[in-house]
Image: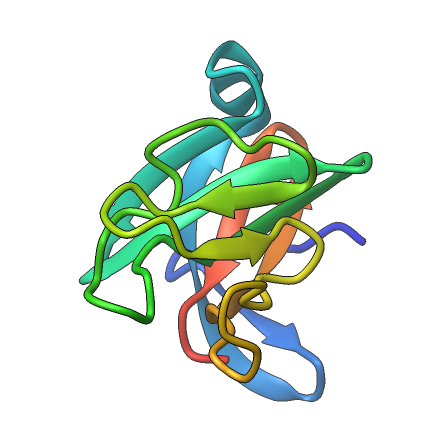
Length: 120
């Protein structure tokens, strides 16, 4: 699904008005071997491609706030650098302690640009 942007990067998204922020380009993500982290408006975001789909989750571990995406994903999971908590690449669920998932972010890709919805 493509998005139409205005001068304020605002668009209709699932029936409500939402501000989308430019996160990265597809080329930038490809150059980083399909996994990168970025700070956007106070959010530490882990952007990656898994099973053919570009996804974004919080890069902040639910345990003590360590970086989930410091190392490349292996075996369909990310492992936090600090205390080895594991999170599923599929949807950010915590494999170490069920019930403590990472926040997922909605993305929209328009041409080569990846936009993130920080409000949803």
